[in-house]
Amino acid sequence: MRRSDNGGFGQLKNRGNRYLAEKPRNSPTSTTRCVKIAIFPNRESAVTGITIALSKGRIFEETLPLLAAAGIVPDEDPEKSRKLIIGANQPDVRLVIVRASDVPTYVQYGAADMGVAGRDVLIEHGGTGLYQPLDLNIAKCRMMVAAPEGFDYASAVQQGARLKVATKYIKTAREHFAAKGVHVDLIKLYGSMELAPLVGLSDAIVDLVSSGATLKANRLAAVEHIMDISSRLIVNQAALKLKRAKLQPIIDAFQRAVEQ
Ligand code: ATP
Ligand code: MG
Image (cartoon, rainbow, N blue to C red; front, side, top):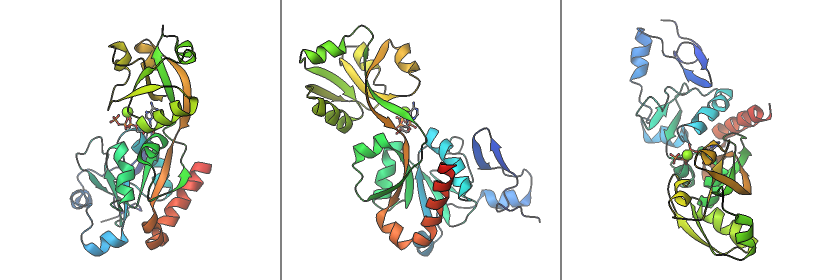
C-alpha cells in the first residue's frame, strides 16, 4: 500500500480556499484513516500533543493556508462534519471547533494550546492568560457605530442626547463612548444587531462591518469608525513554556506565511 507524503490522505488539494486532505475513495487506507480518533489516545499524548482552537466559517477557512504553511492539514471540514474534535495529518495535532467568542476561553484555561480569535472577541474577553504573538491579518473588518439612514447621529451627540445603543460588544462600546464623553444606555444582544434600531429597541448599534451590504439592506448607515479588526494567533502562556519545541515552529511558520 503506497502512502503519500501527507499521511495517506491522497492529494492535498487547494479547493478554492481549501487546504484539506482529500481522502482517496475505495482505498483500504481511507477506511482505516476514516475511523482515526482525533481525541488523543492517552494522558501522555494530551500533555505532549498540540490542540488548536478554531471557529467554523471565515476563521477556519482563512487559517487553513497558515496551517498548511506549518505542515498541518486537517482531516475534515467542520462545515461538513459534526465532529467537534478534528484530527490532522500530524498525529500529535488536533483541532477543536468552538464558537468564535469561546476560542480565548479554551486557550486561557489550557484546554487548547493555541487558537485564532478576532480582535473584537479578544477585547471582550480581556486577554487574561493569553500570549498574542501575531496579527494574522485575516477576517478583516471594522468595528463601527451605525444608525438608521435618516438619524442625525452627529447632532444627537453634539446636543448631549442620551443614546440607546444595542451591541454584542459591550466592553468595546462602553470604552468608545466613555472616551468621547457620550452618554449611552447599552443593550446587550447576541445576534442581528441591525434589527434593533428598525424596531425601536435602540437608536444606534455597534457592530462589525465589512462591505456594508447588510447595513444598506436594512437602511442603516455607518456613522463612526471605532477600530479596525483582524484575527490574531493566541497561545496559552503556560503551554508556550512547556511545549515550546512544538509550538514555536508553528508560530514561526504562521509568521512567515503572514509576511509573504
Ligand atoms: P456567529 O456569527 O455564529 O454569531 P461570530 O459572529 O462570533 O459568530 P463569525 O461571524 O464567524 O462568528 O466571525 C468570527 C470573527 O470574524 C469575528 O470575531 C470577527 O473578528 C470576524 N468577522 C466577523 N464578521 C466579519 C465580516 N463581515 N468580515 C470579516 N470578518 C468578520
Ligand atoms: Mg457573525
